[in-house]
Image (cartoon, rainbow, N blue to C red; front, side, top):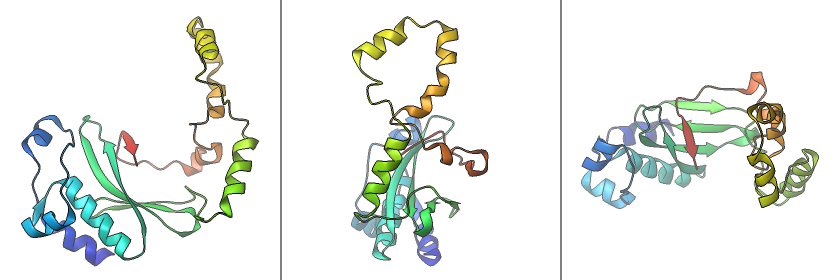
Length: 178
């Protein structure tokens, strides 16, 4: 994979004018176009890298992130064995390895484990219901702060074992969309 990463990084980077000005990704080229033109934007490099990694039988995904300046950026995520994920930065060649970030299984046998884990956390399924929203609308700041410990019960909250101090890894992005 490192040789492929180097080869893709050697392809010329060029971004559309709007992307340079606003920082918003709104154009994507196909891998064939990138190879034919021998240039592409950051997201195009990420798509090409993702295709190459998938060709190597990696479980690869293109991700869009928002950096601190607010501009959008693209990179590749691969799910590795033993629950590790790797972020592949196409512009610099950097890789970030994060251990124990997923179950490490992709077959049907993991479904009961995930279902049980979801039940064990007692997730609040009705958190977006009209009644719950109306109830929270009248909360004072103090009441909102007092109920912060309930955030871990939201269906969208990360698993508590993933947010322990020894599991936190700084990644240079403000938000991530896969």
